[in-house]
Image 1 (cartoon, rainbow, N blue to C red):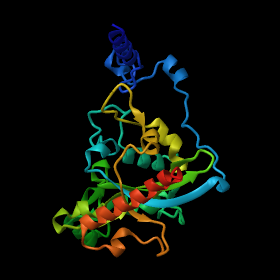
Image 2 (tube, rainbow, N blue to C red):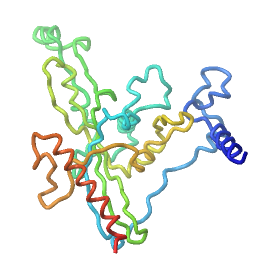
Image 3 (spheres, rainbow, N blue to C red):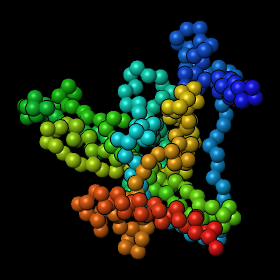
Image 4 (cartoon, rainbow, N blue to C red):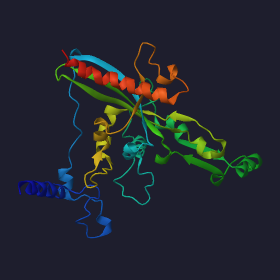
Length: 299
């Protein structure tokens, strides 16, 4: 009987959680009210991302920086990829790419860089060359040759969207905290990877121009990613924020580079044309990092 009562308490506890996947869906009097927050929800929803604690350099016994690939073909990484079609879905659900690009366009996200070392800052106009491709049709060329101008209907524009993103790349630091006595991870940057927009204009050419579109300084994007929610397949009434998903490493990734004496060379630089051995090397690097914490408590 005690076990049954415990199970009932757990079930009712989950049922009593607030609905967040479809805001106000249970209290809406018309379909237009679905997705609108009530005054009580607005007053309650004032949380912020959990701030990172201060880590003194003297407390870091060991650290290693890693660069990883998050393959969006893997099922566990689907929350970072979907939804790709937003025509028939609520405004509260957007893919990670759409969230970042939207905030870059409206100016809320400015910590955008050209590489993973954050050496050169980029603006929207700087990265639009990879995100948007414009092409003039044959009729437009004839019009330009005859009258010296091209009407807008003769210009084709191809824009990258969430469905074109093939993978994400992340840079982070694994470090051993002396005070906590444990191995920890801090995410530094995130980058979408896709073929350039030009490949959509000429699909028959078989162009494989996969590039890093832009790098985002992750600590500067936490507020934005905390507000954006990813789908929770186990409980759709409790979506999780992208900030929580990424910080808790709820994704599958493969190390393709780490900081090393050879100038941070990648795995493909010393293991070429062998995908299996590259995967095994990535697992070896992961095992080295995991063993650091295990060896800490071995006497």
